Amino acid sequence: MSIEQTLQTLVNENDVVLFMKGTKMMPQCGFSSRVAGVLNFLGLEYQDINVLEDEEIRTGIKTFSDWPTIPQLYVKGEFIGGCDIITEMTLSGELDQMFVEKDIAFDKEKADQIRAANSEE
Image (cartoon, rainbow, N blue to C red; front, side):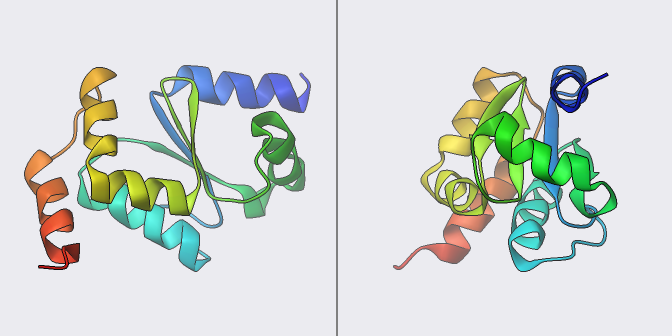
């Protein structure tokens, strides 16, 4: 199986997949930690893929998504983005909306707490 096929299978077989440095319980970089922290706080069920364990996945995912950085979040087979995009979507409510539209269970109250804690009021 080629790396593209492997990645496609991972993305297709899991509703939410985070390609990251480290694991959801032990992130190995600040950007991965931020995204995993948001997903964990929201109580989301997701598959974490530690790119540090497999060089082929680490380089292959960048080509697969045409995105140069890690972490990378996929929801229902769709590439969503990296740390900055996930942060912006969380703060704007777009991430909530997408989860609702794609029928992904998450804790809406926790999402509201993140926005309240980051509001400039």
